[in-house]
Length: 127
Image 1 (cartoon, rainbow, N blue to C red):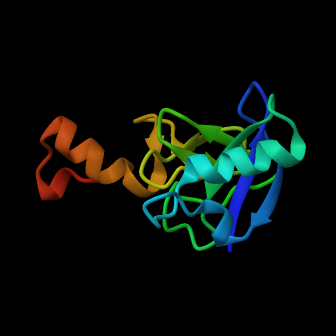
Image 2 (cartoon, rainbow, N blue to C red; image 1 turned 180 degrees about the horizontal axis):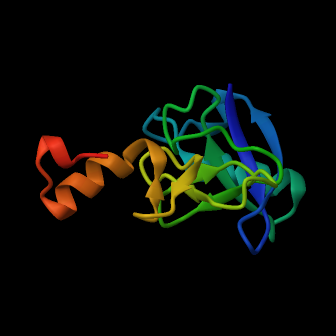
């Protein structure tokens, strides 16, 4: 089964539906996202917008979540931002929300390494 997320004009996920893999097969016998999109539009209208998502996060980094967004910059789905803490930033490698290190303005999990690379710190100087 394939999964497709309907997104609005702001790339916010409105719904996620399941589509039979048979609907994705093109003339060459290969799965085609475009065929899946056309199928979704045949059901919900030609003006609807659809992006394929992976239940196992095999592509587009995360499974689409209602209220989350599709980032064309990262070609990935980003879950809805939690209401707190306010200092959350998107990790560009995972497209998940992480706490920001105020000193480096980077996600906490990567801030020490990035800070050391940027500043060329010695091992003793690492935070």
